[in-house]
Image (cartoon, rainbow, N blue to C red; front, side):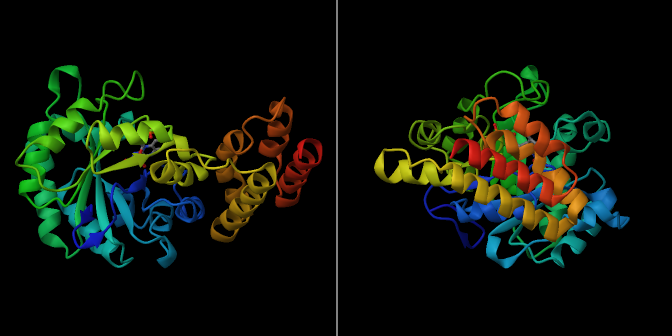
Length: 325
Ligand SMILES: Cc1cc2nc3c(=O)[nH]c(=O)nc-3n(C[C@H](O)[C@H](O)[C@H](O)COP(=O)(O)O)c2cc1C
C-alpha cells in the first residue's frame, strides 16, 4: 500500500502527471473517472502567486471529487516559497508538490524547476523549510540530475527524505535530455531499493502502455506510475492499465461515440471553468488523440482547432460521428 503521509493510495497507484495547460480541473476530472488514483495541478509559479497573478491564482482551483489532489508549485526563493505554501494551504489540497524538474529555460534560468539540480543544498534547504511551514505533506517531483555527469538522484532522494519529504516522483531523464531519448528507470529503481529509503518512489517517463506500467511495477519494483503524455486526449489510458493489472488483458477501447461524448463533455467543462474562448483553446491539444485512428483526420482537426465557438466545434465532432460511426 503506497501512502503520501496518511493518504492511502492503494497498491501501485497511477498518478496523473502535472502538465502545464493540460492537467486543469476538467481534464483531471476525466482522468479521475477513468481510474487515476492521484492527480496534480499544473505547476504554479510562486512568484506569480504571491503577486496575485490571475493565471497562477486560477490554477489553485481544485474540487472534492478529484481528491487526493496535489497542488504543484515552483520557485527558488525561500521567502516566496513559504508565502506560497500559506496561499496554497487555503485551497486545502491533500498535499503540496514541489517541481524540481521543469527543464524549460525561463524556469531553469531563475534557478527553479530542474535549475535547482545545480544547487542541491538549496533544494534541500527549501524543502525542509516548506515541510516545517505546513501541516500538509510535501512531495517532490524531479529528474535524475542536471546532466549525464551529474546524476545525483540517489543522494538527493535520501536528503529530501531526511528533511521530511513524503514521496518523490522521479522522471527518468536529466535536464539536459529535456524530453529526448528514452527515460531510464534503472536509477529510479536504485533509489527505491536503497535500504535507507522508506517513502514511496513513483516512476515517471514514457509510461505509454499498460505493459510498460507492469514492467515499472514488477521489474523495477516502483511504488506507482506517473503518467503524462500518454493520457493527453486519452483519459481511458488509466482504465486500460487498471484492467490490464487485473486481467492481463486490455480493456475494450472506447467507441467513437464515447470519444465524442467525452470530447464534448471536456469542452463543456473547460468552458464552464474558464469561459468559451479559453475553454476552446485549452481543449484543442487533446483532439488528435481523442480521434486517433480516424482516416484523414487532419481535415476535421483543422475545423476543430480553428473554430471559435462551442457550436462550431460540436458541429465538427458531429461531422466525424456521422462519417465514421
Ligand atoms: C505539455 C506538458 C506540460 C508539462 N508540465 C509540467 C508541469 O507543469 N509540472 C511538471 O512537474 N512537469 C510537467 N511536465 C512533465 C510531465 O509531468 C512528465 O514528467 C513528462 O511528460 C514525462 O512523463 P511522460 O513520458 O509520461 O509524459 C509537462 C509535460 C508536458 C508534455
